[in-house]
Length: 489
Image (cartoon, rainbow, N blue to C red; front, side):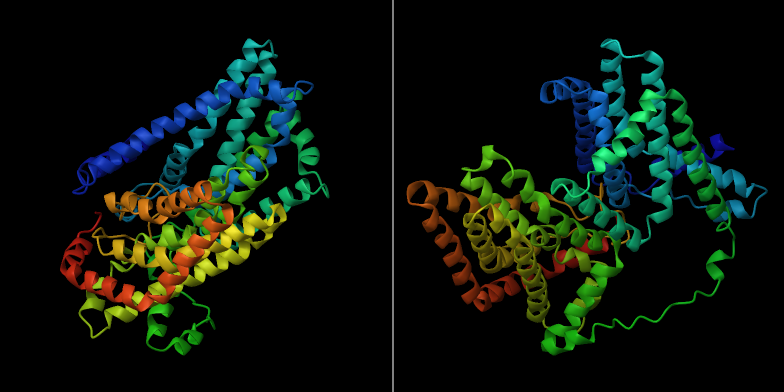
C-alpha cells in the first residue's frame, strides 16, 4: 500500500499543470539547498577541531551536550515556520476498501522523510565520523547518533501536533529567550542543568532507549489524532466558532483609511505567511547582539548603520516588498470598486510606519552599548520612515505575481521576482553607502545628521511622493491585475 500511495503522489507531482512554471526559481532553490547541505557537513566535520581550539581543557562531547537544549528548542521553533505539513488528498480512498490505518501510517511516514529531518544528520554524521577517527568508543558514538535520530523524529512529530497552535509558538519563543537571558546574566545556567542529561546519551549507551521510546510515543499520539480525523463527512460537521471581541473597531478613527487598515491587520493575523513576518521581525530585534557583543565590530560604524536600517526596517522589507501582492486574491475586486487608490496606499504607508516606530522602540536597549547605537538606530528609523517607505511602495507597482496566503512562509517563492532583489539596492545599500561616505569624509555626527535630515525631508514631502506612487500604480494597474489572475505564479 505504501508503494501505491507513493506512486500516486509521484504521478500527481509530474502531471501537475504548474510543474514547468518558475523553473528558474526552483533551480536556484535546489542549488541553495545543496549549498546548505554542504555547509552543514563542513561545519559538522570541523566542529570537533573548533571546540578543541576554543575549549582546549574540555571534552568536545561535553561542550556540545551543554547546548543541546537550545538546539532542540530552536529547531522546534523554526520548524513551525519552515516545515510543511504532509498533505494528501484522502477523500477518494475513503470510499474504497483501504484501511484508515494504512493512510495514517503513510502520512506520518511521509513526514519522517522530510528534508528537514536530514539537515541535522548532515551536521551530526560528519561530527561522529571525526569522533571515530579520534579514537572515541565506537559503540558510544553510534548509539549517540541513533539517539540524535530519535530526537529529530520526536521533534518532527511534535511539530505536527503544535504546528497550528500559535500559543505553542509564543511559549517556545518565550522559553528560548528566557533561558538564554537567565544563562547570559548568570541567574540560572540552562547549559549546566541540561548538559549532563544530554551527555548521558553518549556516556551511558543504554539511555538511547529513552529518546527512542519518546519518539514512538509521540508517533502513537499523532497516529491516534490523525486516525480520528479521517472521515468522509468530517468536513460536514458544524463548527462551533468562538465569538471574538477583537473586531478592530478602533481603526475607524483613522477615517477613510480605517477599512484598509482593518483589512490588513486581519489578513496579517489570520494567515500563516503574513503572521510569520511579524514573528520574524520581533525575533530580529536580537540580531544586533551578534555584532554589538563582539569587539571586532566595535569600530565598524558602517556595520552598525546596516544593523540600524535592517532592525528598524525588517518588517518594512519583508512585508512591504510584496505590496500589493498580499491582496492579489481580491485585488481585482478592489480595483473594480469605487475605492480611492491613494487611500489604499496611505493605509499601507501608515501600517509600515507603525512597524518602523515599534521596531525602533524595541531597539532602544542597545543604548547599553553606547549612545552611538541609539543615534544610529534613530537616524535609520527616520530614513526608513521618510525615504524607504515611498521607495518600497513605488517598487510594489512592479509586482505581478500572485501570493497564496495559506502556503508555508519558508521555502515558498510565490510572488518572488527580480523586483525583490533590485529593491534591496535603494532600501538597504543606499543608506549604508550615504552613511559610510559621510562618516569617513566628515564625522560620525555628520553621517547621523545626514540620514536624519533626509528622512525628515522625505516625511515632509510624503504627500508629493505618494501622489507620484499613486500615478505609477494607475499606470501599472492592468498589468498587475493580469498577473494576479495567474495562480501558482
